[in-house]
Length: 259
Image 1 (cartoon, one colour):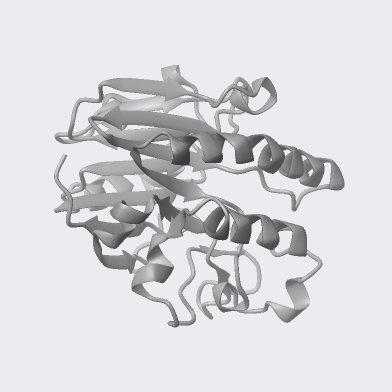
Image 2 (cartoon, rainbow, N blue to C red; image 1 turned 60 degrees about the vertical axis):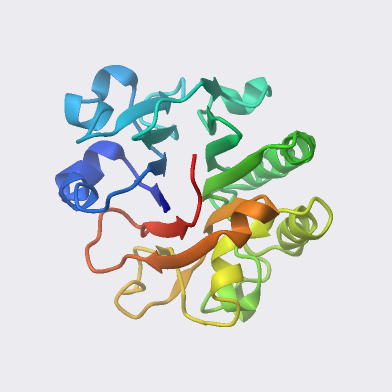
């Protein structure tokens, strides 16, 4: 069994102070994909670099205290790739790929467009540039799982207040249609929805306003999106909400898969 966890940390140091590593020590994970590190390599403690029997790889943003992605693995990768070849977004630390035999594990952090129209346009540029990369990954003949914060809720079932958010970043028609095309045209699979196709109120992010988390007024914007054969091997999934390490919750999926 292969256990893969994805979590937007909203700051690796903040998450560490909230018990993230004590929780992680009990998870028996093979891979942990993390987003929004908000740290530079020199900021990382020994525990953050290599907790327990895991080894860490990181792609930090050039801007301090911003973005950044990481992968923990109990397996030694044959290759680690930082970025996907687009300078604007590689400078923001949004893509990290680790290859293990025929399996590639990716930690991905799509831009958020909620802060300004300028950032929404950056998000659209990312989506346009990332499409051919997704196409090439799919055509390479490898098994791939892209774990991370995609900053898009796909369907009304994926956020509580969908009616009032149809003109807001994260649930715009253009964003949702792009994600539909990722699945329908390129053949990627939303692994969580393969296992739980019709279950509502399954969210991975909550606003810090208005007791959204306590009331479970959330969004499902964190995904494990994989190639079809790997998706077929998925057996169990969970979103952990008992403890709070950030404004996101860890998404865990177990695959009947051997490296």
